[in-house]
Image (tube, helix red, strand yellow):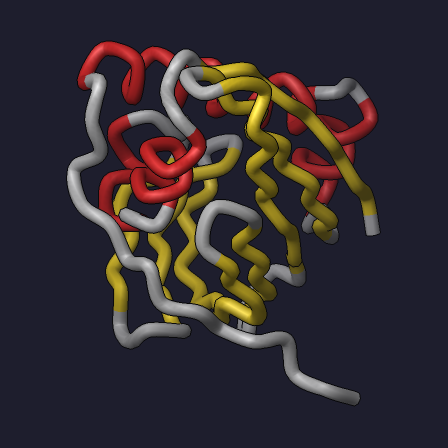
Length: 153
């Protein structure tokens, strides 16, 4: 497994940043290679992505969601990946968004891309595009304020 952690500071209140992040179907508007995300239920999403010329589909389960704090997930099929996005209040109108992700690169192309830091740059780029997206809008496109509690072992 490989991992990456990246952050970006956005000029919106924490609630706005968090609420926008819960709008998974909007991810293709700012995430490179994400062609479609469908929300199947409160805790399940279906993804269509293109990575290095390879098209993939997989489902991911939201394993924890706490309003204005964090959203965590893990894939349930296909390429193994898991992650968490956390939201930290800097001040009334600024929020730090931090994405941590672990993944298992598949094939020579993905393994080489991982070694060359392409995944790090893609995640940093996605966060920067999220910043531009939410700051340009100034408001979220929707919100889901429900909680998903972490399963106990």
